[in-house]
Image (cartoon, rainbow, N blue to C red; front, side):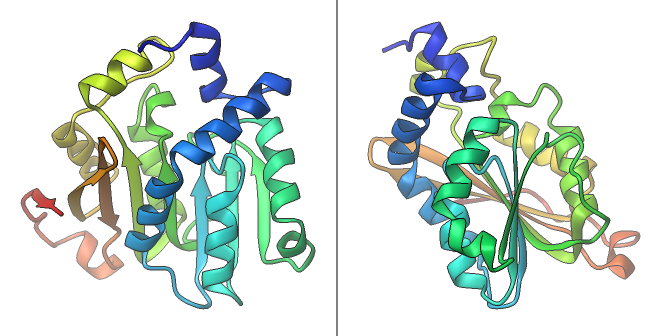
Length: 224
């Protein structure tokens, strides 16, 4: 069923009371996607991790527990999400293990090679030009850094959350854009979560020595 336009807009950048309600509903409906995305990210103790589009901060909390004594950074476009995620992660923020900002994926407020790993779940729909966020994500990842993106592009998703608020990209298009960023290793994992098929794209920034000379591997589709 197609969602009302005012609800669809709130999923893009929640604000006010309605935004908080929509954000909580979204967090519940995407809990399993976040769990799998974090698993595929393979966070380790001491890692510096970035989440783009942290929402209510549930994945931030999970990552913070897994990478201690590392640090988890996060950016989100919504001031309301900053408030909600900050409350959820208040203890970790006070200890300096979580740092949340309001910022866009197109201009990440971090130095080059700041993070070991990065994660972004159900955010690509809101990027007019995904190449810019992909380039920024590669910039802030260390050589060998790992990126996990999760999104849907099936007919049901396109019907429920239509354009112009949402934009959809095919698997091969996303892989091409990531390679243009450039990420040197890219693979796609398809997972059936409940009634939905979710695409998890895993990309690795090669070492500096390899990035200028290594041939890009062919696209691999992994079904699991």
